[in-house]
Length: 466
Image (cartoon, rainbow, N blue to C red):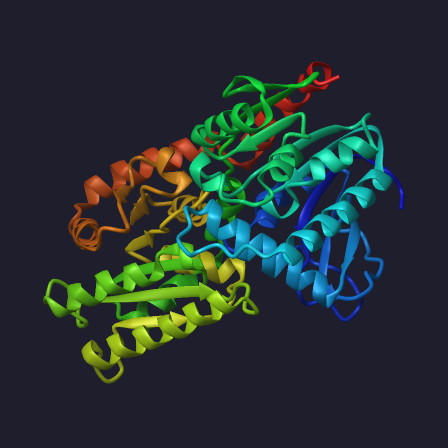
């Protein structure tokens, strides 16, 4: 494979699961996903993306997507189980999300995680030009920066963590905490969603590695590692354009009619994940129905839960619990032809998602913990007429930027109920003021601004770390 001056390294290639009959590849799009976030940049910039293609066994060569070359990494069944389902998503994911679920520590998973990270680093070393910029993404590949530095000290290495980074007392639980911290700090610039994460890492580097420095720069042996907050965003122009298409506008009108043109529509769009607060949200809505504060004749909830990590036991159990609770709520409060909740456990394409955003009166985004949550930003960008209300968890990274949303603590079910009622009762003038302010902010803080800010900060790090 030809070498590139810009290499993105991520767990998954940005491919749709379904390859076209002619063998062509299409860009993978999911609500709030990494591939969607980077699409606007990499469809205009020649680069190579290193990642797993999604199938078990040998990695077959893949055609380019526009100027983007693809470098597939093979994964076997046991490797997928240990590296991805095991250490990444049953150890790191819950721990990094404040241990919402108890993390599992398995020594075998660690060995597989380390071996797969080395495979990614070796493949990256092969495709990177001399002096190239390499941008490593997320917790799946936390060892890659240091492994790559050992293989290719000439390249400039960035690492960006899309999920929260936990407080030191939680990170200290990890049996392999030193290797994970050193792996991440092998980068020249480590980026996070929020400043608190950089502070947590600086504390850990001082405690575990004897490093000096502050929240924005860590002096580690003979190197300076820059750190900072770079809140990720969306392609605002793309969402605005999409939401103006005739198909989307017609679909939004049809959805309103199907759901009940006189009804208030509450919408949630999440990956099916225990960090997203879906169960708390259902409890709050159920109690509003029980108490008569919300009536099925006047309102309806639409819960989209995009399938996720279906082979991981915790996720299968979550799906079962949610489906039972939706059935109970509809059984108790629904009427013939009028369910209290429409529950959709399926992926949605971008156009239908934009239509849903425009059909809703209240968007309910209430994760228990989230690095950013791009769905909240997508909803704001899609509301071209400045209508609609956004109910947003304080514990989503987006809350720091979208302060005009109806902010809520999702752990407080009574508070969540009150906030939902406030959003439903808000005046058109209040909603327009809030939405206009958020849309104005996103216009200047879109995906291009995020990439520009990160890559601009990364380049000076070249001289500091050498």
